[in-house]
Image 1: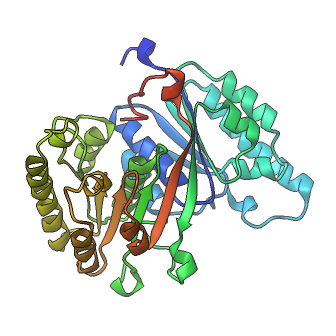
Image 2: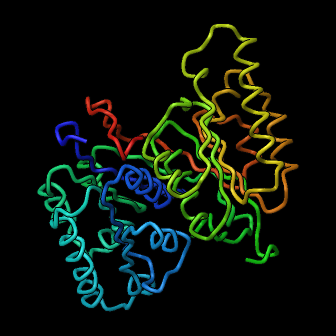
Image 3: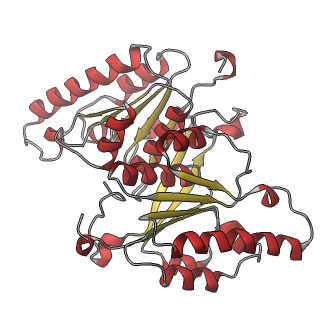
Length: 176
Length: 176
């Protein structure tokens, strides 16, 4: 489609309910269906993850990049966590600046911001100065107020009822 | 995966925010990635729709069935609307009962229920008596209380900020 019709958006899915990363995946599918180039960088996901979305992404030739490992078990060494977060963020910046994508998802980036490993102002500057026509999707709980203010679209996924609290385990193909 | 590990869920994405159908699409992608058989029936979508999700679905051999047309412009003839809703619902029941799927999405089915075209109790009986191991995803605003009570997982997508209210148009690949 002609670029003039494009209005690049920053979309934020936050809140404590389920569906944030899932909605980002749906958006990737929709964009991919239109021949757009898409990429998801996941801050929390283990690099060995082989969930439904990884399996799908390989078949679709969509880049899902797990940055995770270190974030799921905190090292209790703030400097080490910060260094790892910075490495991950550097890769995000590289992907954003590359101009190679129509949609980039920063999955669960809210957590390293909340923990003080990433500077929210630096993230916003990167989003603001991104290549034209690049949509950005951000997911994660407790989004920083500055991110909410900066985003064009914000949905709070609010937990009304969660099956895990009824003792139902996470379901393959549904939860991961 | 062995059936014993499966706990079939009824998942409800409701609320006035964006991301409900998008999350359902993400869940389909995830399930498809695991080789599960999936299907989405959309109550509001025009039968001529050729959005990003339709284009993707064709390439993935996923069934997305638009039931829509008649619902977007009300006929002002309640009996006619009811008859059309019933036809659509009959197809949903057929798909659910077929045993051919692991995940069936009833996209925006809350609207015909709200409008009084479909009986919520009949919908719930169909969900309750569905084949074992079938996950159901329901989307749409203003979900009936009985649906909320019946579902295993309920997320309210709450609108915090919507780009359309800032005069930004719906974006291909993002919104449709």
